[in-house]
Image (cartoon, rainbow, N blue to C red):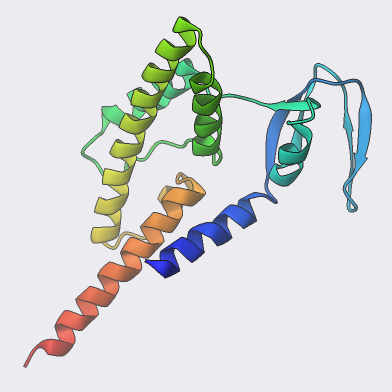
Length: 181
C-alpha cells in the first residue's frame, strides 16, 4: 500500500505543474514564469499552472472554474449509455476530479439551502460517474487491454489505477504459471 500512496503523491506533485483554466478576478497584471510571461486581465480566462493557482486564488486574484451540474449530467448520461461496455469510456477533462472536489468543497462551506441541495446532487452524480468509470477501468485491466485511445480518455488518477491494476493482474497471472507442475 505504501508504493501506491507514493505514486499518488508523486502524481499530485506532477499535476501541480500542469495548466488549468481560471477566471481572472483582479485588475490586469503580468506574471513572469521564467519560460513565459502570462498577462492576466480582469474578467478574462487564462491557463495557469496548478501550483500558481494555489498561490493566487487565496489572495483573490483568480478563481478556479467549478464543475457544473450540467457538465456532470452530460458525462454521466454518456457514461451510462454503455455502462457495461468496458471500451466505452467517455472523454472527460483531465482535471475533472480536481474541479469536482473544488466545487464540492465550496458548496459544503455554504449555509444556503440551495447550495446544500446542489452539494448533495453534485456529490451523488460525481460518485455515480466515478463508480461507472472505475468499473470499466477494472474490466479493461482484467482483460489486459492496452488501447492508447482509451487511456487518453482517463484522468491521471484513473490512469494510475488502471496501470497499477494491470500490473498487479499481470504479476498474479505470471505467478500462476510458475506454480504449475
